Image (cartoon, rainbow over all chains, first blue to last red; front, side):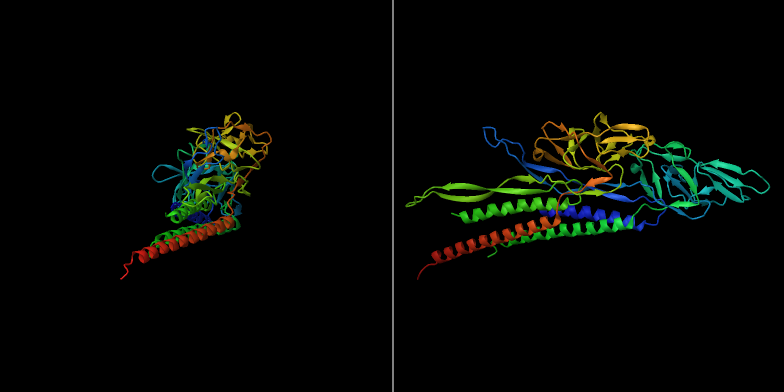
Length: 263
Length: 245
């Protein structure tokens, strides 16, 4: 009886679907979060009678064969990398990327991570760092006596220093981009890492061709649309229910079989 | 002699088959471009040797599975707004280059790989008129026109290859939303492609659940037939076998 195991694959797939939706909803207010979608595909088929096989020696063929499917599987959970809305925070170290690209973050273990969540701050020694305290590449230090810090659309960081008329340039932020953004691996903490699937990063100055621009005082919100997610949740839940109905129907049939000959 | 039992058995086996097909449809309710299937049965007629005094031919009819019919109707098109989700509105298939040769699919969810090629969820390349389609980060947001032309900021990148077959119900399913066939692929001239859209499965849950109940009840009826047939035999054995004092 395949029906039992087939329906089980259906329930598993829908469970993954619900988990992905739950994660999207939970991250509705996470800066720079990109919503994910579960993608399904049918499992392999068992050929019992090949379509097109000859049904007589005069050359007539079977119009439809018998191919039994084995259920469904989750093919991929992919990130939808559309732009989130920009929210004004007025915090000088909140930076949003409008367009494509990622900030490069230097991890404590020496590797690089990438993020679009630009809620940065200063470390005790004046470096621009992430929420977790990791340095934003290339490592820009803000002097302690700076009155204000300005980041322009091209990613130049400038500070006004008391006693100086012209603002002092502190550094230049760079953006990284990938052939396949969806292939980046999520590390948690809004950070993503390069993988074989994403390809290697190419870096460039914000505002140059193919790179986004920087908006100071803004945060990119999650691109989760709650209405869409709730609708998806309802249909996933119904699909789960339907598959469980198949299990109970199959169970019912087997019960009847077992009862035969019971006297 | 146990003909009634064997006829019921053939129906019970057929019911299991029907149930397997229905459960596969329901499991694939959320698989893009999945086409629902239905088990088809036919009668298998057996001629019985004539007993003494019988003149009319005596036959016995069993149930046999004849094939599985695929419903090729189009699923609903739903908007996902993902730039690489594309749906064919109308007839046709995308061509996918796999390690085992070309395969065909209507599942229009694609992604990029590390070289920027448009690939399926399993990493097999989507074919355009001039081979694989490669999108570099410099192309920005790609636009896929209704006729399948893929273009980016720097100009045209290629055109999607949309093909069709003389008899698409004879395509063999291979799993992973792919079909394989020995038929020749014919290019579709006026393909209508929609970007940011995906074709959902054409499984209608209500229909499947009602079919499932139908199969379940039919199975129940046959099971009780088998049961009463068995009771009949038991009684006969008890009656005939009891020693008369």
